[in-house]
Length: 166
Image (tube, rainbow, N blue to C red; front, side, top):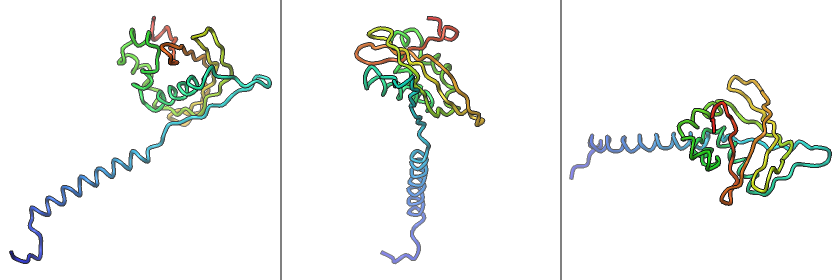
């Protein structure tokens, strides 16, 4: 075998292809690792000396996960947390149009003012969302967020008759 000063062309092409694939992979991986996680803070608006209490730990976790899904663009994750009755009549494609604009904004925090138990299986959360819009404006949205317990899990309830006539 000859002692070559330069490697054959096919070997250079082979190495370049692997280096290129590795570089693209590392770039995409770094992009995923460095992309900001859309998280928010839950604050509690005190009414006198009483801080609102969640019915259980699962409800608080699902509330937090639901709103994180909505504002991070995880539309499927948010849809999966909607009430099963809602999902039976509203297809995912229609739901996507309803929630797609949330991704443009950043949810800074949710102030929980009051948690009302409407029944053994239904709660209403009086809350104030503080949102930073895509143009940097800070807005506050007051809402009554409803949740229903079905099959052992808390599910979000959308009550928007203009968008979803149920």
